[in-house]
Image (cartoon, rainbow, N blue to C red; front, side, top):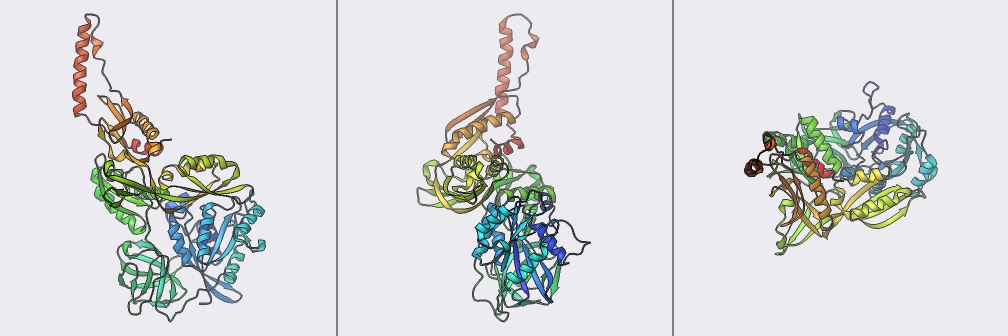
Length: 595
């Protein structure tokens, strides 16, 4: 065990951790030159295109240092805030962490939040300054920021470059010298932490785990503590570039187990794995069910594709256990699913994967969050959808989820950033100057307000500099009302939203104006109204397309023209009773981009 080192890489999104991992795999000759490609651990097309890590990956490297052979288990983690639970489990499986900071950008919000996770788990931190080959690198300034943040010495910070390979030998040397070997007892009952799972269409679910205590052999009968399910270990092994089977793994090892599990619901990230014959007395701490934060309806464009969409969602869920969905129906859109996502990036990725991997064209409704609803009779329940709200007379109060958001920005943008957060009902709780140039603002604000377009706006007002990170801090009472959109007096349930009382009037007015542009003209007038309960707060009318029926009257008595116009008016009236309004797909998307 003394020659095993388990470590992960933590960094803000786009600070170059996957590229640095490539160089380490190359240096230790884990990946042959022939198999080498950029971002070798990001195996999804989407990850390569967007340059982000979506799934965390694990890989074992062999490294010889001072005549001894060491096994280095690297766990690469996603950098985006939506996947912070996965990051926390990956960190729990390690004894050390490489803290990578981009020397051109400095410390950002996600760096700090992941660093705190690592410090909570007592990991040894190795600070690394990446992208040193770039002409606009500012190593001294960023080193000062790192020293302020973790209190290390200047000479402990390794200057490296993922592109040129500078500093890689120093990093590997530091890992061996600084990161402690895993502690564990291989004679104790089996206890392993599952930090990730992937689905293979031939072998079922493959769980990645780190053994804390005990040994696991091929053919052992194992049990998952949180789900209580028991399985035979068909195959155990270690993760090189591909999976390599082993006869047995013992404490301190990171590896995988295949046991013919067909659904990912039976394996949960953060769960503990133990033996049936000799179980461990307690599970590893920190397990929690992944809670979706953002909900949206996903509907097929053609009603016939409903079953195909269900199959596609089930397959996606096998690869991504944090996606939740349940069937629902809407008067405007037909049958579809109510899906729960970890955040907006997660929602975008799922939409993109549905389109690419399964060729599904879908309509996504306005995303919203879950609310706690309390009625006068003392009941309370969760509502994900505005249509699930009881009558206003039965309501006692609605509570909405709040988050603590930390925003790091250049100090010149502090005014616009504050204004943006205040407009979103945020309350400033803390303001720290990290350096004279950079400031960290902490706001408490409703989750519902950041679900729409907050991140895009933050990036545009700060010229791309501000970074943003958040976590949930519970529910608080809010003055929320349901805003309905009516077309010719009929409510369109897919466009109704729960909104704060102060924003309802301007939002309703903007929505009507936007729909007026997007709904094509029909043979009759279409009234677009925004309503709160029975009170109409805004209205626009899409005028009818009319034929010029009086064109053939030239001269003569006015009554002849009037007769033709009256006839047309009757026809239009009859038309309005039978005609129905088609809401184009663009209208649903436009609501997201109202500003």
